[in-house]
Length: 270
Image (cartoon, rainbow, N blue to C red):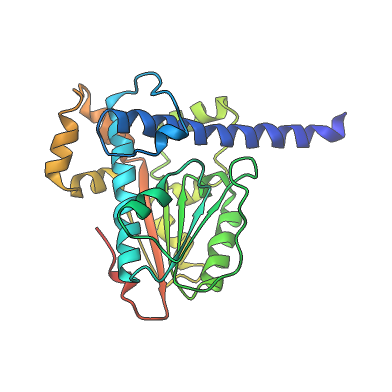
C-alpha cells in the first residue's frame, strides 16, 4: 500500500487543480451575469449563476478577461488572422466562440488540458502562433515551466506567449493566498518565478524569447477604457477599495514574443 501513496497524492493534487477550472468558470459566469462583460456561451458550461461573489472578485476577473483579450486580439490583428492559438490549461474558456463572433478567428485554435477536460492534442505546426496560459505555469516547478516556454521558443519562430498568474508573492497577503490554496491541496510549485514582474519576464528572456513585458493587474485595470471601468464600478458598491488593490497587485499579465517574420510583435502592449 505504501508504494501506491505517491500516485494517490498525485491524483488528489490533479483533482484539486481541475477544481480550480470550475471555480474560475463559476466566477466568470457570475460576473458576466452582473454585466461586467458579455459572454453568451459560458451559461452552457455553468448552468447556474451560483452564489454571490464579492465585488473585488468580479472586478478582478473583469481586469483579467479584458487584459488578456486586449493582447490576444492585438496579436491576431497584427498577423491578419494568419496564426494559431494554443490555450494551455484552457479549462472551460469560451475564447474560441468570442473570436468567432467578432470575426477574428485564427487559422488554428488548440486547447490543452487534462484528458477529462479537453481531449484534443497539439501537433507541431509552425504558422505564427499565440500560446495562452492563465494560472497554469504556477502549478509547475520553475524548471518544468522554463522547459515548456523554452520548447515553445524553439518550436515556433514567430510567436507570442501570454501568461496570467500570481506576482509579488513575498508578503503577508500572498502568504494567506498560498495557505488557502494548500488547504485545498493545491501546491504552487512555481512560486519562485512569481516573486516580481522581473522574475516573470526573466523566465521568458532566459529561454529563447526575444522580448518580454509584464504588468500587474492594478496597472492594467487603470489602463483599461475608463468609461467602461466607470460603468462596471456602478454595478456594485465596493466598500474596501484597498482589498481590490491588494488583490490586483498580486496578479499580472506577462507577454513574450519572437518575431522572425518582423511583424512588429514586440510593439504589442497596453
